[in-house]
Image (cartoon, rainbow, N blue to C red; front, side, top):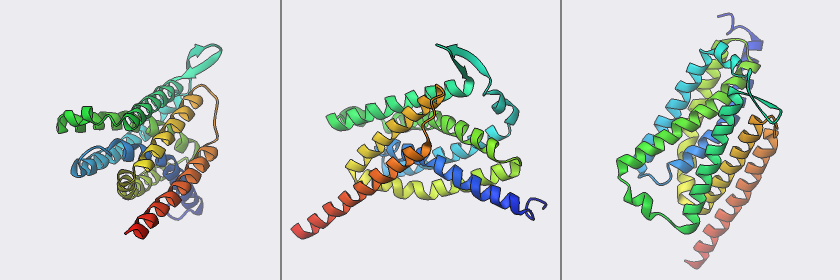
Amino acid sequence: MELLASPEAWVALLTLTALEIVLGIDNVIFLSVIVARLPPEQAKRARQIGLLLALVFRIVLLSLLVWLIGLKEPVLTVKGVALSWRDIILIGGGMFLIAKATHEIHAEVEAAHGEAEAKSAASAFFWVIIQIIVIDLVFSLDSIITAIGMAEDIEIMVAAVIIACFIMYVSSGPVSKFVADHPTTKMLALAFLVLIGVALVADGFKFHIPRGYIYFAIVFAAAVELFNVLARRNRRKKVK
């Protein structure tokens, strides 16, 4: 009740929720790309499972505040750079994103869909869920450590995470459909994943790339692609 009556708590909640939503953009892009080749029903289920896992991981990690803070302590030194467990996880997650996005780009360019179609639906669905779990862990860790630095009350952190995950769930469906309906948009989303992966690896090696630059590039490129989609639609209407 004290938190509900505190203006500072509401400001902290709004600020942290906005930050969690922005940080969740990476998650939504990855989910949209990774479920694109699944049948519609399986794609919807994979998105639901992925976002539910994202919520669970974030809440579990919030309950381990002391352990999370300890993740920033150096455990390894590479060429004069002290790395913590957080850094190692970010580097590993970033490299996974780069490798996954590069593999998908290669498959799109070479039109290599035969291998994916040859796999059983259950196997493909299982592999998608495994990849979602891996990347959810990476994004959750970064998101929660940021939340710890911004708010003092765990109730505010949990509320912000729940609101952000709900908004991610609502937006993931339309984003996934748009990516599936427009192949060039999927290629753009894969390029975003490479960019995000590079940023995660750089963060792990203590070279911080301001997220504002990355999100500006994403918004600008997405706006250009939107104009391209509208132009193609208008050309098709004129031909008809």
